Length: 158
Image (cartoon, rainbow, N blue to C red):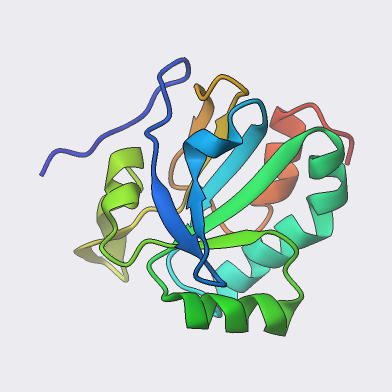
């Protein structure tokens, strides 16, 4: 399987996934808005919780700058709902159990895990502009400190 890597300026692959409340969310329906789409391995794990809480704590300034934040994992909606409720997450979480959307964005592939090569989620973030084009494609990001670096990349004050 060849890994897709999206480049700035390319069209963001469209998708329809269900959110934590089992409601469908279609990327194309968000045209005209700036979107931060981030892929994380699993709800309620330490690193993913840190990253999600960082997005939660920055949501006011991100939304104020016109960004809609969407988190994507392979978790089922019920687990995403529990994650949202447990940590007071104030943005949409999407379920991609067959990792098809992960693959379309290059957020699924070979990675090292405790010294072993495995297939899995590559923690990644994409900034999509109002026309549906990739503005930033950030692969292999770290859970801790990522949102602060992203805010800096987007020119948002700390």
